[in-house]
Image (tube, rainbow, N blue to C red; front, side, top):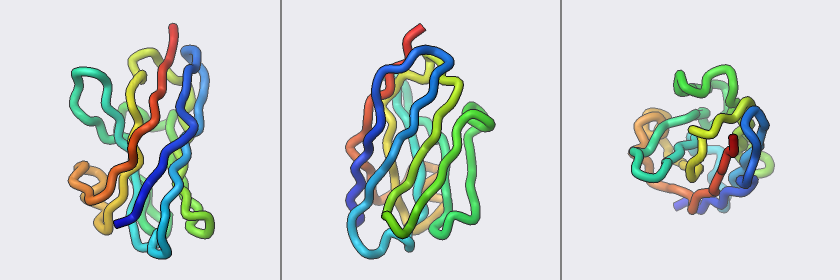
Length: 123
């Protein structure tokens, strides 16, 4: 139901940082838990981070804990992913996702996906 548009992807050198943003449409953004997944070519979708509808709870995959930070601004209908210390193996398409259930964000069984934004990390 909610429409999602990611931005902020691009090319970055190893060790660098990127900040991804996701803009959501509609008046019910604050009712949705949000999160980020990524998918590299030939690989399964990988959970990265999740945030509750009010932003009080966050969850991270072990692979990104301490390097990535998820945040949201319900007044602006946006969710962000700050990515630091990027590695070449982090090259993937990054997706913004939304669901009314936080558990669905973690498992990827969500109702809404964005189109994705490409992140390429060079060595």
